[in-house]
Image (tube, rainbow, N blue to C red; front, top):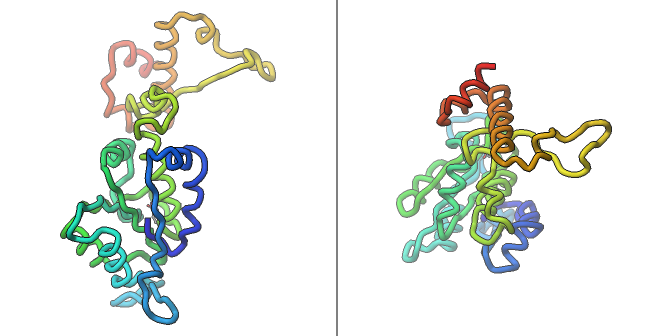
Length: 238
Ligand SMILES: Nc1ncccc1[N+](=O)[O-]
C-alpha cells in the first residue's frame, strides 16, 4: 500500500488481518509516497490543469513508487485504486481479488491522482479503480482498510471457521436475516421458537424466509439476481 498517511493503515495490524499477518498468511507492506519526492517540501500535489477546486496528486511520485515497488521486469501486482469514480466494490470482486497472489493499493488524497498514473500502470499491470459507495471520503486509506478486510477474510486459514464466509450476506445473493444467541429471553424478547426446535429443515426455511423479507424491504433490487423457488415467491407475495 502506498499512502501519504501510512499511519492510517496501522489498524491492519490489529485483529483478523493482523493475526493473519503474524501467522504468515498475508504479507503487508505500507509505504509513504513522500519517499518518492525529491524536493525540500516533499510535494505530492499540484493544482489541476484547466482549473477547478482543490489539488491533484502529481504523477511523478506515483510513477516512481510503482517502478520501485513493482519493477517492470518482474511479476506484476494487480493495482487497486479506490476512487468515487470507480466501479462498485462488491463481494464478487472481493472473491476475485482474493485469488490474486499480489495486490497493490494506491491511496489517493485531495481530488485524486493525475489520470496518467493509472494509464501508465495499465500498460503493465491490471488496474482496478473501485468505489465503495456514492459518497466522498477525504482519501483512499479508509477504502483500503475496507477492501483489505473484505478480501483478507476470504483467504484460506484467515477465518477460523471457513463456513462463516460461505454463510455471509450476499453469499446467496440475499441479505442475512436476524440472528440470536443466549439468553433465550432478553428484556422480555424471546428467541423465535423455530430456532430452538432443532428442526433443521424448518430452521433453514425460516432463515430463508427472513432473508427474503429483509432483502425485499431493504434491497429489492437484489431479488432479480437470485434464483427463487415457489416457496420463496410465496413469501415475497405476502
Ligand atoms: N468514496 C470514495 N471517496 C474517496 C476516495 C475513495 C472512495 N471510494 O469509494 O473508494
